[in-house]
Image 1 (cartoon, rainbow, N blue to C red):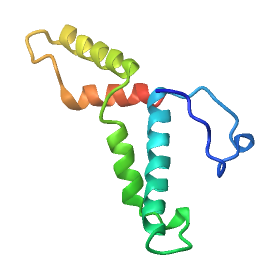
Image 2 (tube, rainbow, N blue to C red; image 1 turned 180 degrees about the vertical axis):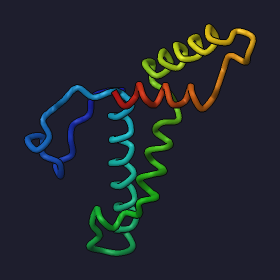
Image 3 (cartoon, rainbow, N blue to C red; image 1 turned 60 degrees about the vertical axis):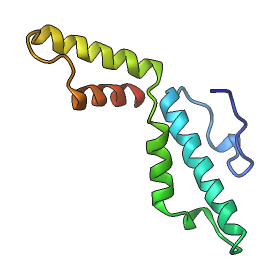
Image 4 (cartoon, rainbow, N blue to C red; image 1 turned 180 degrees about the horizontal axis):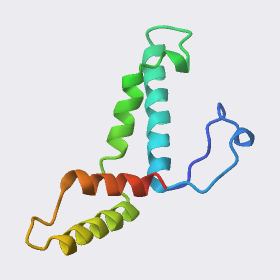
Length: 110
């Protein structure tokens, strides 16, 4: 993902850069992009819309869609969790979807 400039409605001085995971950045940009797209689409029909007018579902859908593809760090965490499960019970099925998903999400939230 290439570096983007912050939009003028969000001054750099208000949010100094911090170390953030790739997934958090991906979700944040998806939410901003979805909100701006909704506002632009609706502004063509009606004037004076604000960020607070964007339905929560627009933001939620954008966040979930952004998380569809795992980051490299998430894949490593998921594989480590799968290996841990396999070592604990080699005769059982290696993959436990919910546990692996949480491991990946935990890594994304670091």
